[in-house]
Length: 518
Image (cartoon, rainbow, N blue to C red; front, side, top):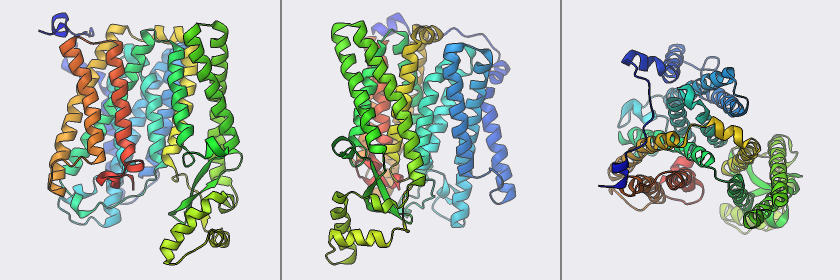
């Protein structure tokens, strides 16, 4: 018998409530679902978009609600006001209602767009999981409902401060992907599609909450704030080392984004003025904080630590300015085609030569851009993963700065370690079977569509590796008695692999599942 079974799992003391009492306690979950039903019925009755009853508007309302919830719940970590506590729960519930409504009304919009053609599975043909944007809406809805289940009780309300900021970043990135409705290839029109992908969205959402819980455990357990800052600084290096085409910020001191001709992307990037130098300064601040924190880790020098935090917080301010300037330039830069670096024209000329069937020189490509400058534009959807990385970096810098500044207030507000460990275990206990069903239903669907259960496609492999991380969490806990920090690290790793599976296939590693990013 394992040590875990001998010792027994951590149990959270609960009030003995009757079934009606328990249902009343679930009002934060039921109320948004009821709101969604009302919105769907109103949209069907109207027969067309009315007021805010269309997908994009509802998703924007969801984002506003989630941001409000994140701010309220994080603020309540420090000031501990009952009104903030209550409003944090209400705005989270509102965000879930708007999120779920937008996701489901997209179903109606997809059917209206195509005229509700009969497919293999009738109306399920238009189930809103046609691309990565729709998948993200489901992902966020799954995370929101899981968060509501956890924080519906006042004693766990503080845990929403760890999951809601991540949810804001994920939904923001999803909105940057573009909300266009796609028609899937007939080979993918199967009853298994809504089953498989719905399980994926809910499972990923539960994994997001488990990540927040694991981070909460590490904070409560006394992990050094400087160690967390080092991890964020390394994430910053990854972001700045991969954006702008991979080298423009690091080697050229400029930031470039993809150009569009109408709604079609061009294989060339253009520079956003003044943004590159600001990113370089931000990167230097991140590097300085990283070097100082590493030195502090080795020497435990108070003065070095103090300067490390000054640079780290300075990087958070600079990153905020980067985001403001980025979105301002995307909307207001004049003649975007006129800012293409010289090194970009050979790539454009090669692409034009392939399209035209004759050789076109870089000089001709440059003249073509100049002659068509009015048709060349920028788009918020041009580089969504890059923009999402920049937003995520700002949120990480800001939250870690705040948590380090008020570390005692944060840790005192969190539940006891035993309670956090128990909630994390239960959350992963829900995520793991969902990820298992994800693999099983995906294999059945693949056999129906492609004639094989498993083909080592990039997304299949990514899903398997993420599943193995959570399997490792449960195996080491049940068979070897692991808990606490070691289990928390497994949860962090698992969610990192989930994020890679969610985005990596569509934007980094091509495969049969790349249709999700179109």
